[in-house]
Image (cartoon, rainbow, N blue to C red; front, side, top):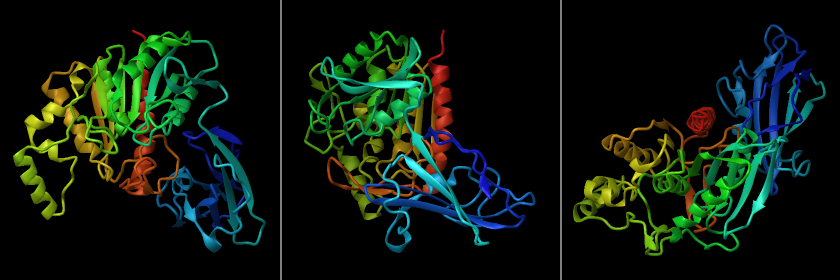
Length: 421
């Protein structure tokens, strides 16, 4: 048996054609995919039956057993999960490169197994990057290697701080032809340690710096953010008219306090804290108490129960100067991103927003939506800033589907939103 042609290196968002050839019809083989990082082995496996032509094709055949069900060309990638003890033996120490995933195929006829390592990268060979530490900014600029100007994206992460998420997203966008600035705004050298009273003017400086770069088409600029960064993306779009499109992953249409809580807001503008949801009206407090008794309390939903209160903390999304794409998980356990995104959608509708608004809401998906093909099995983690135990929510299958489906639609949205004209 042998693998059909597979690349030695590819972008993490690429869908691979994984086929095993030269098998006997009806042969039973098991495919495994493993990778490791920080002494943790991630492993997935699936068993297939070769078709009448002696081929196993993951793009058209479902496994008879294994880590995932149904036809899924990249099922082995997202279903990788940590393994320990005897299961991890044989994989430990073989590769410490977290970007390399090794595919193996084993038959039941005693023939030697075959393997193929694939290094999956965020920054392709046709893109370059450089650190940005000017005008108080802390970030990393990614852009195509060929001469611009290129349509541009400001990328902001969430409450993890630093360049977490934003630099991977920016690298992928640069590999797809955009100039993308991954911008840290706290928890990095020279910046505040936590998400507390961050001046929106800091991001205005970043937009000015980007617009002045020779490789940037200044009139074709978008912002992309996730979680608290999704809240920020909507807020920046409502503040700076030079932003022509907004993509907000698992966002909120309401502004929230500092994180961890300090008694202040997360954002400031002109030296004043941006209004945020921090206290409850009497009626909302009473209803939230009833919710606790019913086991259905979610503090993020409380402001939605009091229209006047919610309006005071609402992001004025109607001021955004271009189309908006919202992406959420209906089973988000970190915060109710679908409801918080719908709050923004209602405001768009009520104010007669003139641009296109799309909300991609995914059933069985949680908070961890972004680029596709990464493992979606690790749903719980300890927050790196607050130390709190967090649950992303969703199922591995549901979140994987949300990542795969939303990714192509997000790229198509940016292409249309930032088109010439």
